[in-house]
Amino acid sequence: MDRVLDDIEFLARSANRVDVLRLVADRTYTRAELAEATDASQPTLGRILRDFEQRQWIRHHSKGYSATATGRLVAEGLDELFGSLETEHTLRELVEWLPTDALDFDLRRLQDATVTVPTQTRPGAPVSRVIDLIRDADSVFVLSHAFNDRTLAAVADWVEAGGQFEGVFSVDAITPVTDDDALARQLRRLAEHERASLFLYDGAVPLAVTLTDDVLSLLLRDEAGRLQAALDTNDPVVHEWAESVYTEYREESRPLDCEQLDDEPQTDLQ
Image (cartoon, rainbow, N blue to C red):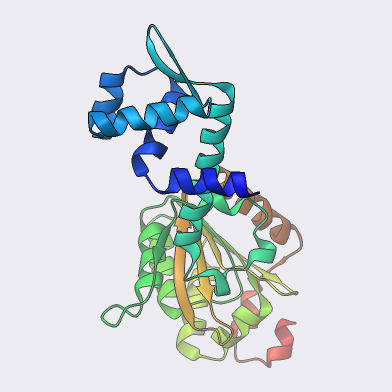
């Protein structure tokens, strides 16, 4: 263990060491090419190459420097570690709100995700981000346990402008809307449109997912239901996962009956 930690510390003390090892793991480089690619001085580069040769991570031949099999192994491990840490930095402030039990994919897929959080000047920034994604899409699928009034109005306008919408909502997401006359009218306006299909799921929905043409957006809420962030990604694996989850809930849902949007008792929706 101590030898492993020594090597980790050895690499961590110098970004140039990491850069050189990752470069030669990909292909052969001359010393001049390594100097140009890393901006390392010749004395620094010389020390790095000697240290790597002593560890048998690289070999020097007529065409330059290339990684050995063990050198490539170390470089691959570095890539995995960097990917994990970069993902952790992306998610660090969000982890307490992430529905991790429902996210059935490698979280490193979220490494390059876009995170939008409320600010003092833009408290509705996460919702605005999702609305922007919807307006730029041809078709949208939503699976959610909540329905924001701004999103509801924006989706209704977008559908009337030519968008195609399908949504699966928990009963708990719909009933608060039916208790508000203005929101109920917006929901009816959407539900009755020929390019919109709404469905009710009788159980709990742990996610708030919006699927546009090629982007998945997750709305993250705290335990009190306050919106804390929007996280979106165009990673194809995550998008495929979301499509599969949406389909599962859709198959177990029932169409929303517009008659249920009248001033009826809440139990009529259940």
